Length: 370
Image (cartoon, rainbow, N blue to C red; front, side, top):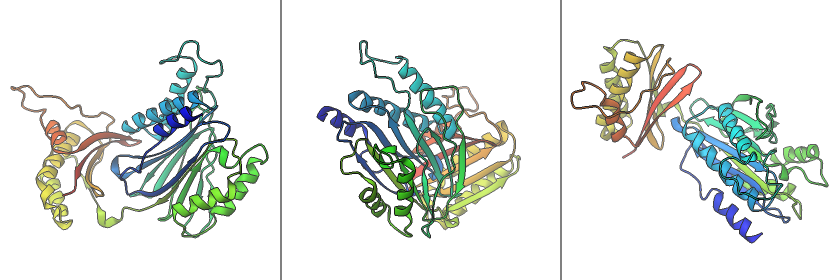
């Protein structure tokens, strides 16, 4: 038990990642019967967005803890690809199925009950610019939303099959959240046990959450005080996130015609905005990034082109278009007349990447603020 607990604690998040989309509080409590595979995560994404994850691997002991670590690592890797929530769960479901079939490093002669079919996961992405939250789940308990006035609702989100079964698509629901709303994610050990039906647990949870303007830490304490049994038979993971908004004063965007002559106007608009934000030190690099990304969008893509700057913990530059084809970073040969712009932009910024949308794609870069 001590070894399994040590392993699990080493695999769970340490500290809180830097992001400003949500204010978070979390709790993890192992069961007395043995360490399980519950986990939670807060993962910063491109465009100032954030992913909130809670999952539950069936069983207890070392295998459950190790499997939890593998699934959590996979979610981080899929997040790096900026996959839509339903696609991310599809990939996670496929991975869980392969692990359950003994592919990918299973130990020969392991326990007969080492399968993971029945693992669940809830995945949500919150965008502080649009205030929209996209959620999907694989057999996991319903998330709760606490409005600023204290109104509580459980999101009407299709259940989806638990991870590892395969073959079934996952559905998403999109909500618009008022600033200061709380999103509450948890595992079934919080609301269900041998002596309490899950409906009774959800009713009790709703009553505890119905308090306006409460901080996430206070919400965690109140929920655990009211719902946690004296001798829990299952692990409990709880994640509470209060939403913030990236206001209009920190967002600037321009719709651009597909005309090469617009590139110079885009550079000028970007530098003027940086001056208004007091970020003249970033003007040179931003001009180069804007020039390269807008030129690529006009030359190689199609559909409407949009330039957007976000002043968050970093300066974010985004150029979107209607094409699903992403530019490829390469090293230009000495005799090549092009092919260096994206390489320079990648070297001069801290991060860059591609995010696909239903309308096309977004190429983004991040620069640390002075």
